[in-house]
Length: 158
Length: 158
DNA sequence: GGTAGTTATTTGACAGCCTCAAGCATTTGG
DNA sequence: CCAAATGCTTGAGGCTGTCAAATAACTACC
Image 1 (cartoon, chains in turn orange, purple, green, red):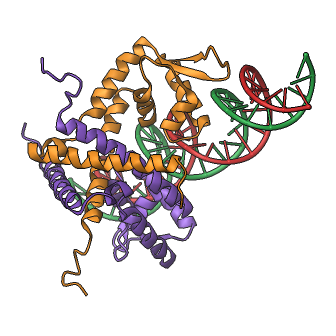
Image 2 (tube, chains in turn orange, green, red, brown):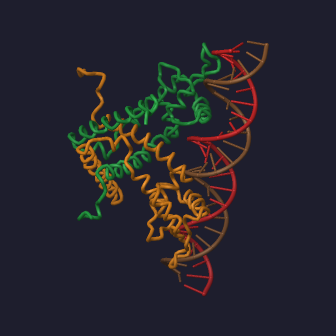
């Protein structure tokens, strides 16, 4: 019954559409650049998540990667084979194996960080004002994300 | 040499960080919902890209999926096995096989469209003004994307 | 202190995605 | 007609991901 039947998408829906498209292209491009470093997306992401100063238990990494622990075994295997990472049994609990980045892993990690934190051309091409506004809005969105995550952990009352 | 050494990220870099985080979470959530429909992300994306009224050659689909043609064979196989899609040899050129959505494919496709065009909670939770601003800014970013893509096709002069 | 239960990681089976190289059928152009 | 180009498929191989079962180590309780 509205007058403009063709563009009846809500702002949020339209934003989602653009968001998806930008994300898709960005994923392709960074994927290609990562491949040049001999890394898959998951491997790169794992490398990024590892704290250079603090060994991370594999289960913790699995959580941050949103995937099964058994999956991390394989990823860690490949990273370890290439000498980017080492498994260290935790002193206090010999069940848990924490991942440490090796020096050569650090070097590659820096490249990955550089590469993946680079904004895509489409965003870099925006005006300063747009870039700032985008950052602020997305920051608020991420805050909602965290708020939702916390209330989830606290147990939703209904 | 700047005073605040800790937050020296440019707006675009910060935006990119938030963008990545939102995209990651969204991918997880839609992935889970798609799994309930028995679809992988690629299958769903393919289903979405197929025009209900216009059979699409597999090579064209490969292009839109940013992947190798041989990959589309497998994806089409799985969709066809489930009766969501049919291969039709093109009348004019019997080499090309165009994909058509079946009625049951159409039903699932509508669900997928609904599901994937839904903005994530983090964006839905933004104020109206933020949603509008976000849409407008991302629209401009997407325009840059298209502009870059076209100049690329035309053959870059530099 | 031994035993049962829990937890962290690994393994194996299985499926999907993805790429490359090779192969087949068909079309196009000389 | 024959050669090159085109569209799809196949096969090999690697990565991501899941689940279920196995192993090792820790915890708690009697």
